[in-house]
Length: 196
Image (cartoon, rainbow, N blue to C red):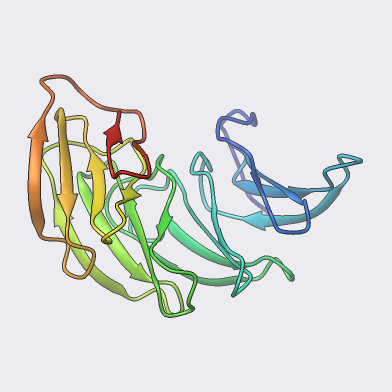
């Protein structure tokens, strides 16, 4: 790919799986690998532009995969075609992305929501990559967002606050301060209880 990487090439992110069992594994060498689950053979590579810590989110209905990179400026959110490996669009912001994206719907016109190190949560169109909204919070975002049953987005921050955001506008519905930085992604149970 003619990429000069001076970073290590290890696997820092988590592992995802496509519907056919293919493993999706991000790496610090700018690539996300698609591996055969049974043999470990490489099936495909998806090229980013920096360290790929963000575990990709996959929309099984559209066959699109979405991930963020550690690149600092503008082009650090990617959409890929899982069948061809083609990059469909890129967009982003000023801060790098360690968190994993959340897909608000499996419909092709759903949103992708991702928080970055610049302290902003952004929503992008899954189909076009256009930014739908952004919401500035008080510190960088390491945790991935989650969603309640009514659609409310839950975004913990390293400022110690758990934010509940409106999925259509990004406006803050409520906030709860835990008095300590939060870097873990939230889990939400069937009763909409939030755990961090």
